[in-house]
Image (cartoon, rainbow, N blue to C red):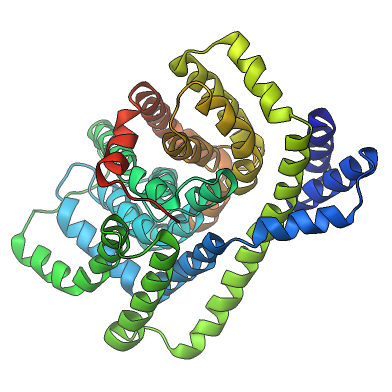
Length: 427
């Protein structure tokens, strides 16, 4: 069954079919071969999407839309400029810090690339950055948005593996900050050799002004993370709170967009949510087929016969995920691979919360690599550069991301200590 599924999936990719359709075709073929009534496919599909935590996805997507249109993202970028604009690398450092702020609210790497890139790239060009350099920094920093909570990929991982989404969110804080710092160090080094990126003097006056303009926006991640850690609400309920708060400050306080603009935001949110849910519905059917055919259990035994060393196993799995990320987008890769790989790593004592964060990060690197890297295409459009120019400019940052992945594999405690300390649970 596994080989039938993989064969149909890669044939669908080669033909250019959407992955969700490829999964649906594979499910029908597997049902016919197994002589299973097609009605069971419907039952399993409904079971896959009839899940309360899934409500967090459209809410967080809509939060990102409101942030971009309502002035929240712009104020956060201005605050980032006064905080780190004096560091060598200038606006490059601002772009990365801004992505940490923005990613800590939107949960989407693609939204981060589009929002921060459209604001930062023109200014970076004026300060001596070449178009590929400016685009590379803004594109690569978007991976932070899928690690620092909230994170849509972590929500999907939590659902398909039945892992606490709240714990996953808390686990993403430290590695997200580490990745951001690593990218800032790389930008510092590149600016030292390249000379691009003017710095500004650090002044308390502008910092205070920027903080006063952005402090309401900064309250949003505090509400989300603080509420989860404090046990006030779950990650799903935090999405609703975040949306209500962002709407209030955008419509009532900042007044930078009109209520009638919400209709377009709702349409875009519904389209993206529909794509995710269709994918998840068919992936649930595939996971059910593989489970009843003992595929996960067989994989566990085969991998254990190769090695039971957690570090070596994680290196093997990380290499596999990197390859998958080259040919498949993050969302389908997560819903397809997580149910198969999680039993393998947990069989040698690896925490599923830790593995979820690591898996999201490594698959997130795939968003930045050709030929299917979604963020690459968005970055090329925003920065008006070719794919070849952008990939060449990103080579030092690829090295940084790989080093960060090795560090997280070698030291799992960097990911697990905070959720273990806070002892949060639930979805």
